[in-house]
Length: 292
Image 1 (tube, rainbow, N blue to C red):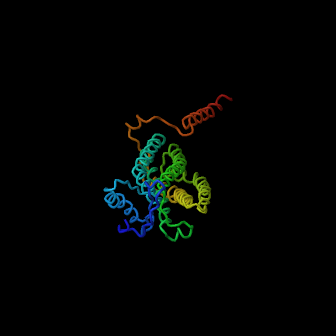
Image 2 (tube, rainbow, N blue to C red):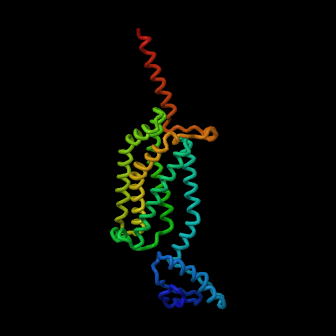
Image 3 (tube, rainbow, N blue to C red):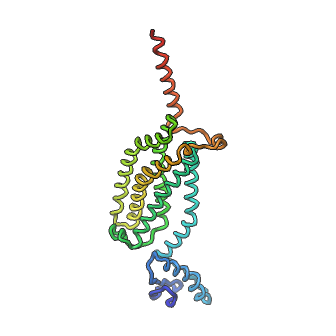
């Protein structure tokens, strides 16, 4: 094992009192998050230890923080696409049902993934020994496998909250006026301050976690802060209105067969409010005639 490529040092074995178990510490000559270290773990498991112990009948297990991180990452990586796909698909169906537009729902999912991808990128850059990691006192260390999954669940929910708030106002204006350009402009003008204020609060709240001494909390805080900042500024205030303006009335296209299948869902009792307003307008028109 000492002669295996990538091994810098092997400590003397520590044997238990019964003499049937021993622990040996192996130190790689590469960094914990390096791909070379991952390859060393796999090489020890598959090529080095099994041939060396075949004749003895002993069993060798490669553990430790690095090996556990590799195993967790492999396990979660295999299932993360299913998790992301299920969440995006369900949100697509829900938004299509509410806003009666597959294109708007698809765009919302893509935009949300953009802000999450930005958070992953910044967080990964910080833990690779970069100037950002030095500035925030984040050491060069692997990212635990559970962090990306937890962050995706939190960030997708927050991003969708901003998206629904903006789109619901745009759709209300479009149903009232039938002008997509005016609806996008009015909807953005009416919701921009609220979205910006809410995002600013979340940025300060998540930003506090960056100063926590725990490295993992720092990583989560940095990722959440980045995602909310990007989502509420670049994505929600620029990309979403710009794409909706360019697409025009195609934003609200709905296949007839899909329209028949999906149930009618109205946000905040839209149908009841519209019916009430119609009744009030009718009463106002009839009232003057009966007074004389």
